[in-house]
Every structure is written in C-alpha cells, then in structure tokens.
Image (cartoon, rainbow, N blue to C red; front, side, top):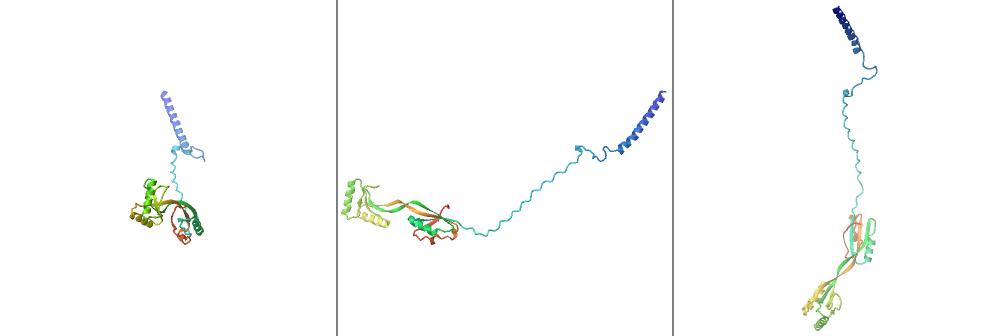
Length: 226
C-alpha cells in the first residue's frame, strides 16, 4: 500500500515539473521584461564609455594688416647752443634773425671767467717805507709809469702796468729785469656775463644759422633739447 502511494506521488511530481517547464518556456522566450515602447534600463557600469572630447583648436590668429608705408619724410631735429654774445642787444638781434617756423628758442645768461689782462709788478718789500724807497730807486733808474699800491690784495706792491697783450707784458718785465728789478707777471681774471641762444630746429639737416647771424666770434655746439 505504501509503495503504491509513493509511486502515485512521484508521478504527480513529474507531471507538475513538466507543466512548469512547459509553461515557463513561453514566459521566458515570448515575453519582454519591459512594456512595449519603454526603453530598456541599463546599469551605469553597463554604459559604453563616452568618447574623449577632441581638444579644442586654438583660435586662428587675427590677420594684422601691414602698416601702410608713410609718404612723409622724417625731419631731423637738432638742438644747438649759439654764442656767446657780448651784449643782450646782440642776443636779441640774433634771436629776431633766426625766428621762423619749426624753430624753438630760449635765451640764457652765464657767468664765465675772463682774462682781463697781464699785470707787471714788483712784489711788496714788506713795509710802506720800504715800498717808497723802492719807488725812489725806480725813479733814479728812469723807470716811469709805476704806482705804489696802498690797498687791494697786494698792498705796498709796485704796479708797473696792466697789459691786454701778453707779449707787451713780457717786454715790460724784461726791461725791468735788465734794469736790475725783479719784475713779475700775473694774469688778471674776472667774472663777466656772456649770453647764449639755445635752439631746437625741426628740420636741422637744412638749417644754417650762420646765414642769419653776422656777429663776429660766434660759434655753436650741440646741447640738450628742451
């Protein structure tokens, strides 16, 4: 009895397994896991790798137009100092003569050391009495044109003349030396004003200031522009 019951159960189990396999085949092959029209979902790990973005191309350089050739000729600027002029009137005359388009000017005055002459003299012997005794010796030797100094930088010295020409000063000294006196020569200088005219000339290559300034002894040299 027990064996018969076991046999029946086995047959029923086989029938149930066969029915499940038969019905399960239609469900697995004939149906989709999604509804029609709905896209299939994928895991992020299943997504295909996105292609790397291509490097951006640098912008093309802008075309710079070539500068147009200038038809104007560049002018040569010159900066000159003209002088020295002896008097302010000479300076004003030159300035009037040189005035014109393309010329900028300024006037200036400077102090300079100038030789005033060559002094022939006998050094002071010491005291005023000794200086007067020396003067009497000059008189006895027939030397004229002398003067006993009473003030100045060399009091009691005996002046024998102030000469513009150094040759004349040397001649006077030699005459006194031949007469037995120790004459000396000293250059005399002093501060005197001199006047200059500075110019900035736009077209310096063609500028000739000498054709306008007639004063003697006037020269020129380059100077700082202003």
